[in-house]
Length: 460
Ligand code: UTP
Image (cartoon, rainbow, N blue to C red):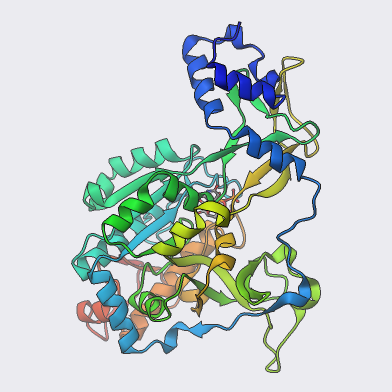
């Protein structure tokens, strides 16, 4: 006898997922409640639809003849009027900041959420600290509490909350930091379409991809709250990039001037085979072509000046209009799931054993945030210098490793110091705390020109 709610039982059975109740009688009352909670969050009909379409070609793959280079504006060309517009927008409290930190960081192989990784080249500050201090500095500069939204997932929520608490929210008022959690998606057995279990009474769930940010923002009611508070734009970035310039007034101002739905920062792609998505016009609308989807001839193509034709490399830094976010999280414009075939260990209900597959046995489904871009009526793509704004922490060693990221931070800060007349000896690690100086003008006001830095130094 399975004492689960009747409507849930009916849905599970109607979708041929009876195996889920294997071992039910041996579960404690608490475990049954938890499992019913998991099952209640599952959209069985949607999973059945996704499973039925598993063999269809990758419908999101664009036809190569429809892909054209994306026109790009240079951030260095923004004039004082544009900057002023952005500053006014910030001062009126129309910008919120959103960092996505729900990923599992599997390539880095760090035990804790990636935001807790120490990257400060001198201070050892963590990614979360650097981001929070930038938001603090921005709030101080514009005299307004810029909301910091932190999106976590089931994999990162508990530790992230505990970490912010232990660090006293990095001195931000508690009410300025808003946590929310992205949704999960069950993994399916690729051969049968059955939901996989990790143990009796426990679904195999994964975060639903960074695109889950947008649906979670809307579904939790946060988007409506932000709008009610007068927020008109959401600055989105990934937790792994400590060089991110959060909501710089030039970028905000140009986004507002262009009445853009979705604005994106790009860096020049360096090599045809660099593993970075490129912004492109796809059938006349804005889109990102993932590196694995960009046909070789397009990846290699050069313009008359000898530069890569498709060189607008994505940084995953976006500024979205709230009105646009409302539209892409409702009705038919909602984002579509991408399917990935993965090796997923599971509990075999029939044999009662744990199975560690050696080949891809499962289907996983993820939403990608950049699938929102083609839905924009007006967009803006802004080129920034990679060495100034983009150094993502992805891998344990080599490119995008902790060493590479710390070196990039130190080099960027050394350039800022030299630009205001400070002498920094070659190879000496330097770091500028966001609350010390967010902009070069602030830096100039604090450090006399001619200052010499010959030992590792943290300006705080
Ligand atoms: P990545 O795709 O690089 O994933 O995420 P990751 O978790 O950092 O690392 P790998 O791939 O497992 O090694 C880019 C950004 O999107 C967030 C991550 O936290 C990171 O900021 N993300 C990713 C989410 O918030 N949720 C997800 O479901 C996936």
